[in-house]
Amino acid sequence: MPGQNAAMTDIVTEVDTGPRRVSRRALVNAPAAELFALVADPHRHPELDGSGTVRREAVEGPHQLSEGARFTVPMRQFGMPYKITSVVTAFAQDRLIEWRHPLGHRWRWEFAAQTPGRTEVTETFDYSTSRAPWMAPLLGFPAQNAKGITATLAALVARYPDA
Image (cartoon, rainbow, N blue to C red):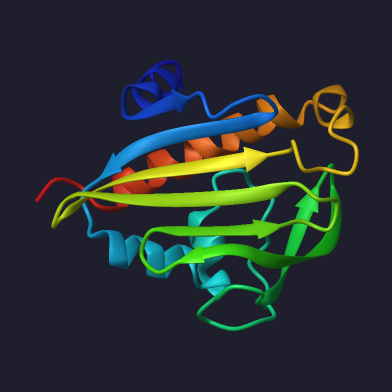
């Protein structure tokens, strides 16, 4: 749809978090604790995925992530199904969760309460920690993940419309 990308960029903004990081931010009409609970439950990740890579099959792992927790999510990319086991590398209840992919890159979610019912949500794909960070741009991952993050955050905003 022609206007869809413009609408998404109106509600999702690019954030400069440094080299080899792709970050986007949106203001969501929901409490930080509620949004954090959604992201901290890997069984609910198919509800969040704007990239189209997370498959809606059984996720393995706890329903509440914590520092050091492992979880496995079925994925599909380039037409190939596979599973990814990630490890939680940073965790602050209702404020931050980050996990490391087997290739070393990280996915980070930050939640900053603006008011009791509004939260600034930032999602980051950080390939600076990857085993081969130079490879991500060659494969188009920064641009591809920017689109997926934007779609994820736009869907999250739409999920919690103004009250």
